[in-house]
Figure (cartoon, rainbow, N blue to C red):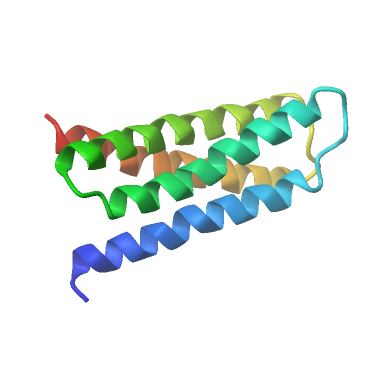
Length: 121
């Protein structure tokens, strides 16, 4: 396995693990009126990061890759938004876990944003 394909496989696992970890955090959120919406939107966006990254990896053309990676960038940014909202609304007692997830999401966002811009610049 060459370095590029190893990176791709590792990044697939990383985005999937982010989804798993965020879903784990969601299970322990304080239940408030707005929490249902946040949970739904966050679950949708974080799982979309992993699913669309996988789809980008098997794209049939540069245009298809670019389309999928753009979705990954948008969904990673949206995931950051929902995690920030959880933090600012104090909806989680898992402060360290939330910080870890914010950092991981931001790193993933930066990687895919770079892939997006380097593919079509």
